[in-house]
Length: 172
Image 1 (cartoon, rainbow, N blue to C red):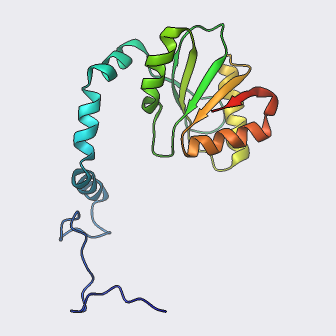
Image 2: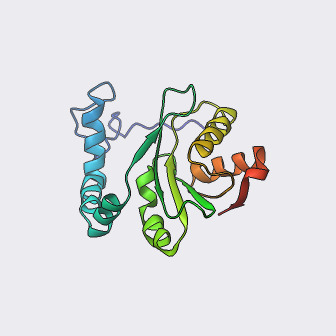
């Protein structure tokens, strides 16, 4: 069955979040801004960034960047807690950043856990990711890790565990 997406008047229905004058070939930054504004994302982001909890996190833990392989990208990460304990590596979702793990770090680092919240650069295959994560973990001196992954981060954690089972203590 073929479905006609045109309304009875023969016109395509419009999405109310997109201004009528904007089309897919227009300025993409304006379109993204319009979608974010319609969804209330700009307000939520600025509210979180101004919260005392997030300010405490950013004043306690420095964002670090590390290039570890031939990939042009850099790993962005926060590293907190004692260096002589096992590491919990936190991998965010596809649209997440290392900052999305700030509550985990604020809750566990003061209790003596070492947490690394990491945002990986773009990799184009699982094998590239595995090699890149190996290099990253070597650089931060983490021989064996527990991995917590959210969404895509969970998938990548599972793939890393399949390729490097001796390096992964557990998956969360």
